[in-house]
Image 1 (cartoon, rainbow, N blue to C red):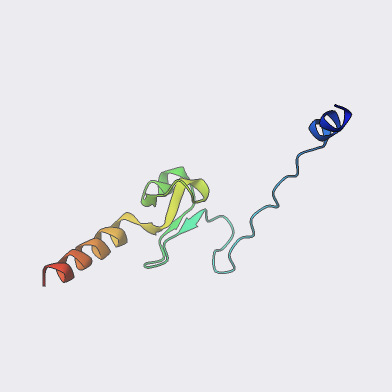
Image 2 (image 1 turned 135 degrees about the vertical axis):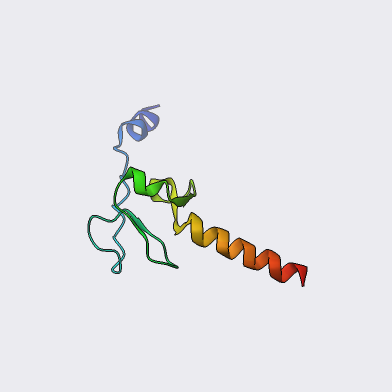
Length: 79
């Protein structure tokens, strides 16, 4: 019983903070890897694709580039 109480009282280890990628300047939340559009605030984040696993809930791909890539893939499948 005493072992269970000790385990419950041990502090939870916090995850180390994520390191910022070297190619992303400070003040930029996310950046499209294809065209280079930068999101500096929540309004700009709306222009990027949603991805719940990613930081800020957005992927590193803007909606325009995603649509272009999707169209090209569909075009190749039709050939």
